[in-house]
Length: 228
Image 1 (cartoon, rainbow, N blue to C red):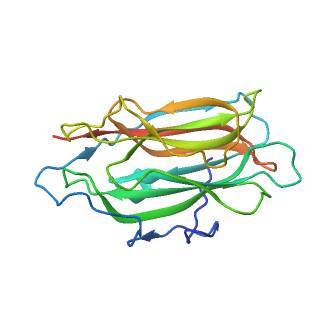
Image 2 (cartoon, rainbow, N blue to C red):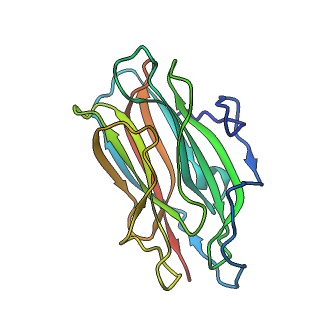
């Protein structure tokens, strides 16, 4: 059974719940509403990285599209690294931000509404959040990249893959992907989890070691974006 931990505040992690806010300061609408509208598929396509290790695991998740509405995509992560005394390098706590996009507008701008949620947290981790986020204007998440350790047993870092719309304005330019900065900056082997063409990132599920917190399995959820 997967466990979802949510947080009320943007900069404070809590397992109490999750809030949707309506005044995102980094928002800028990039076009007025038009008569055309985008739609997001109700069915998801999943892509996963798996360490193959299954002992002593708990689960975490974030489902933007299902929990908050059809226009919400997973655009931002904040993470904490391992406890200071631990010699290993890994993500020990992860939070996500779901941002709403204005589907009735051809330009597909952000509305300013967003929800912040804790995906998982180990029993202990170092203080201080490390952020990685998709830019506000004409940028749509189409997958993530992970950095894993040499033995491919745990996740060390994360960043988001995103795309602009193409020259027609009616599709995503997935042939020219862009990347957010790595959240922490750890070195490691890159594992790419990509959405299919014309799909956007709307959530993820993961399994992590209950006490220590190393991520052993991570699966992204993608849904197709369609302009009629």
